[in-house]
Image 1 (cartoon, one colour):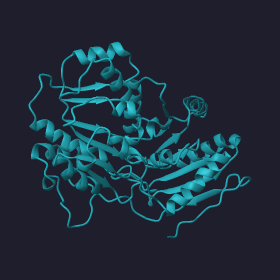
Image 2 (cartoon, helix red, strand yellow):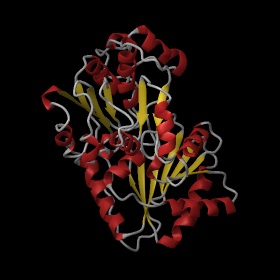
Image 3 (cartoon, one colour):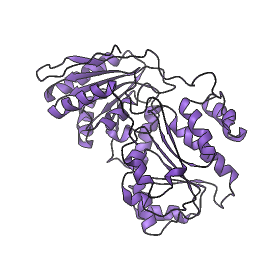
Length: 378
């Protein structure tokens, strides 16, 4: 309650229309006092739990970790959905690490990464370097090597489908792996039909479904504003927002829908001597990783990007998200908003969205309704 319900109309240029904060604090690190308060109490071994405090400074599990870690340690399949910034990555990585430490070691001792955008020859050489305990792969690259029989998943123990809502291509799920492997699907959005797709590869009766209380909800502590603008007004409004942000210690992410818009807008920021980093899918994968690490290190407080930066990236130093181009779908909006106000963040976070087209207005109305009537669909 208490949230304003804005009405967007053509001709109301530059009007700021808020979905105001309904909670005045960021997500908490832990849940209620009756829950386990340490990772050891969840069943993790000291050799897995100790580095969390020593290296990462993490001593207490988040609510999603409280629910997910014990379930995964039991060895069953799991479908886990929780809001962005809630600690999902560690929720599946920690049980995975523990299982790897308990399993017989392979001859290789490195973590192998197979990514796209570098050619089949590079992928083939990485595979020929020998076996590894852990494989991190993009779906496209993994699908390619499996179809060409360059790699086998017959001895797979643990399969994680992170950002599961992006893996709805049945050709990926139909690829063969050991049916005894523990399957874990994770996501901040769980679209309708996902469980049906997973049922083709695993017994759903052995699935534990874990969903957060705020799954598919807009974060109530993040203020969201919609600005009705003409296309020609967007650049000036962006520059004004960045000027207003100069006195803050928080970082800014600016989202565009296309790589060419990112490139064009980058030239404009350069002309105004605004230090920024540029990140979009046409940049080589290795270079993209370096760009985001530079943003995390604070080499620039402004990241200009496409939706490639809207998922799975640690952005606890971000205070403001600007949707220079309005996202095309509601899940895209949820993931962009999820870059601010995350667990561990110093800032509550704000989002400003430029609304230009009629279809943008239609989606804003859906977001407004969604704020009050969120639903969970598996």
